[in-house]
View 1 (cartoon, rainbow, N blue to C red):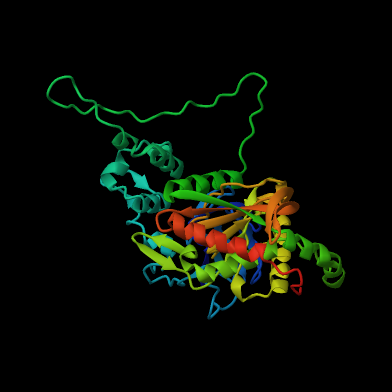
View 2 (view 1 turned 45 degrees about the horizontal axis):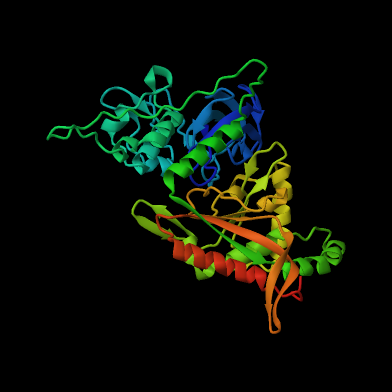
Length: 440
């Protein structure tokens, strides 16, 4: 009987592994075409893995809670029908039917691009094993095998984990930055510099220890990796959005009655960002080694807070092609489904720039961390009424205006202060010069 292997599907840019959280079928059970066999999760989204074929579960290759690399088989299905001619990409691989007189046929498994970029898998000359994720990070950071072998591992058999490597990267280079000690004699001697070890946090009497959730652990890893990858610079400007506030007040009730949806400031922020990125394409790019990838599409990620306190970033694709009404619909739909855990994996990947509205929590401005592999992220603060000085034809006067801080973090490897400042100023101009009669 022919068999099929279901593999861990590709879940998004830069995601190389996912946690198998729950099996929905067990060995020996019947499964229908497109019926879910397992639930999986990454730091960005929870999803299900559907079976592309009907059949009987013959093998489950991992336990619940295991972390599985993208493209790796997770289950074997004994087919209950013909193999589909065009199976879904990344969902499965066929296994040749064996005849008693034939030798086993080697299976071909599609390997995702992230793994192809790494060095060959397996063990080093010393016999130490390195995962594809560790090898990819080492390659990006320019860490050779000789240096990699010297890093202490906390995994089984001294295996080097991602956390081990990120901790090493956080202190790497400190020795080189410190000046060598010079003796009082004629000769200069190099002093051995020990890496800095941060004090370990220990629970005191009465403290409560709470284990991080799976999503929180992965968010920590990605934030640390972003800080270790990009040279973060944050520029901040203050703008007068009184006209924008008046426009919303003028239209929000009628809009809600007509469309059945809230009219918020976020779609307008997305609109301003999309227009700016068309003028300053370097901010809509990624760094690949010594090359810069200028993105053709403007796909704006919109950071959304979840009820459990975690964060997810659904993506508005081709935001520059959407009308203001289209952006309102897209923002509200993605935000609602994000809060209800209804997003699909492809809706949180492919972003080229990220917007985070920290003003939702009354924060006036922030210094956001870049969402890799992007090169910039904009934070919009809370809109506050303040007395400000206005220049008029009759002289300066003080008036109550609605003021907003825009803060943008950008990767100084390719975005200098002049470019970042000009782009941020242009975003501010679009918002500050908003026409109160703009139709919606």
